Amino acid sequence: MRDSEVEIVRSLPLFSSMAEENLGSMLAGSFLQRFPATVVLFAESDLTDFLHVLVEGQVELYASVNNREGTMTLIKPVATFVLASALVDGAYQMSARTLETSQILMIPAENVRKAMRDDSEFAQKAVMELAACYHGVVRAYKNIKLRTAVERLANYLLVQHRRQSGEGEITLPVEKRTLASMLGMTPENLSRAFSTLKPYGVTVDGADIRLEKLNDLETLAKPSEFIDAR
Image (cartoon, rainbow, N blue to C red; front, side, top):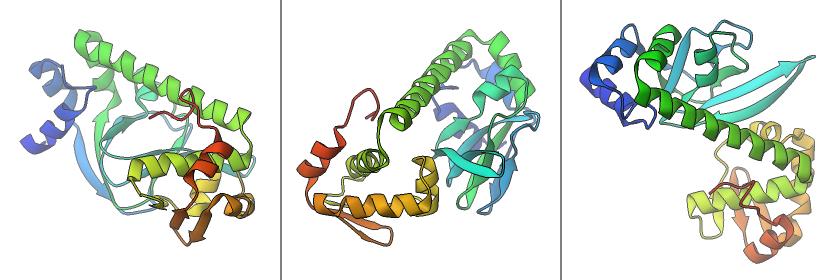
């Protein structure tokens, strides 16, 4: 790996406190690769060979059963994914594919497990990252279980507005089909949910969304700090 690539790894909180020799040992056999969009990186039930670090692009984690498929989460740079599977030395629990051209660092899972044993700083950071992932799963589960489809969409739009600082305008970062799956809807239900939000000032033009009545939308959505992480 080039020095610039090592610095990318070092910049991540998970690896920031590792001893130099342990970081070097972990990265032995790692490689940085560029993938075009729609490439399946791995499938659920495959044995976990690598810890992945998304450097550029966007990755969708998804699962399927009985010919049904659902988006579990979206990964944006710079971030690791499938840490739990890499540490357990088992199978991937989700599949992954690129949503756009992506650059991904692949670290052998065996090296990650060795670093977990040899480097206490890394072990502590790994526990913290797994805890954060757990909190994310709980928030997502509460969002699905405790809100209607319209409420989930309304809160998603408010979160995106906060992230994009859109001043009443946002651009959906994913296709509507992917958004529907991520929010636990069919594309048809998503379309109906957008229609339901029209009286609350939501207008749709492709991927561009206008939010003209933010107070009304927030009254409907009832954002929660225990679900809608800031």
